[in-house]
Image (cartoon, rainbow over the protein chains, first blue to last red):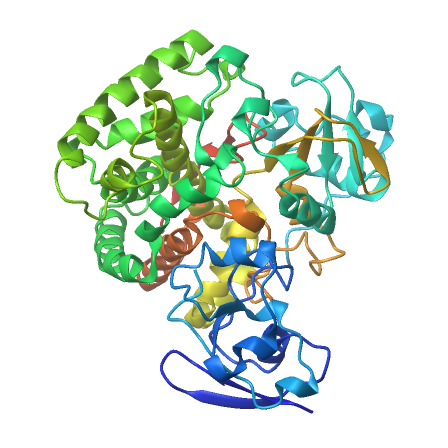
Amino acid sequence: MPTITYIEFNGTSHSIEVENGLSVMEGAVNNNVPGIDADCGGSCACATCHVFVDDAWLAKCGTPDTQEKSMLGFAATAQENSRLACQITVTDALDGLVVRMPEAQH
Amino acid sequence: MNAPVNYDPSHEAWTMPLDQVDPANPMRFIAGAELPYLARLRRDAPVHYTPQNSMFGPYWSVTKYNDIMQVELNTEVFSSSWAHGGISVRDRPKELRIPMFIAMDPPVHDDQRKVVQPIVAPFNLQKFEALIRERTAMVLDSLPRGETFDWVEKVSIPLTTMMLASLFDFPFEDRHLLSHWSDCSTMPVEANGFIKSEQHREEVFGELLAYFTKLWNERVNEPVRPDLVSMLAHGEATKNMSPREYLGNLILLIVGGNDTTRNSMSGGVLFMHQNPDEFAKLRANPKLVDSAVSEIIRYQTPLAHMRRTATQDTELGGQQIKAGDKVVMWYLSANRDDAVIENPDAFIVDRKRPRQHISFGFGIHRCVGNRLAELQLKVLWEQMLARFPKVEVVGEPKRVFSSFVRGYASLPVRIPA
């Protein structure tokens, strides 16, 4: 299984094996990784699974669609490398992916 | 034991012909009897049409969580625009409609929302937290012991009004005007309250606009600072608003920051009283406050619905919706949908996924102040637990005559001496 590394805002790192087909958000929530709220449960409707994707991995994660872009527009701390973790599907190609959490999910 | 689910198969909600079910009738809300009608629709007609005979004209009701999510995400087909009648089941007369960003679609909605959004950014919330703690302590310490008083009047209104005054940097001594204007904005004329006619409401809006225009003029020539008036006056997408649009956005921010949290502050006290075992759980483990707060917000659903207008013919839940039809998303019903929320009629302070409720809406119109609202409620409950053994509800709450704002005019309580 691919390993995803989630780094909390305070620097705490969690490396988790996540099954192919799940979203990066589900990988965090199912393993009680703090810092990802995912209020809407994965519908790209709340922007509370906001993560920063390490530059080396950005292209491999694909491009956000219109809905994701528009939700990211409402995340307080969004940057160029911001994504919603519910919109990134885990595959073997993402083995080793590193995502960082913002200070807060709103 | 949780409060029992009042399922009574002989109740009119379950026996009346489906086309007569009119869930938006405010009489049911003032009687606290609105839930069975929505439960009936969830079971028998999840996407349901109420014909002409309602006081709001014909409208669709969407009652299931996942169907509502579809409507929320499809802003092209389901418009929020004030030009179509906006976001509540009640249409104001065409000439009195008011633009505000909650009642706009992209891209203007997005641009205006982004102007005010930083007021609740993490940095500002941290700044507000100390202030909220101090004020909550002051209000709770001033409450009488061993005698009956109105929780709405003595706690919910003062706390939310003070918060609102800080968000606008509104003259503190005049802050009662904010809750007055909030009530005037949402009160139906038929409620026989302060607002006697739509013309009367317009007069009150005139006072509101005059007061806030003075604040705008003071702040527009000063450097921008973190208060909502200054942010609107300096924001690229808002600085050239018409007075009517400024009024609309003020009403939105006043109502959004006031009615909602106020009614969750009152509702929580009622739910804890009705569910003593849940309150005992919270008392025994104050770490449950965060999850209890989300549960209170779900259970209260202080805005019972949001409305959209179809911009084209479409299908939803097997029903044919026509361009121009009014579509009401019943948040109150989705929050009781057992397809998504386990045992939804029970009030449970330690749910597995307490934040999975729809009270804040979803998609681009999701409540901008949700984390601030949660913070206010969290501080309130932390400080109540630290002070009072319990707050007893000693009489029937008086509910509000509205199927939009779901709340309480009064809640008689007593804190043991």
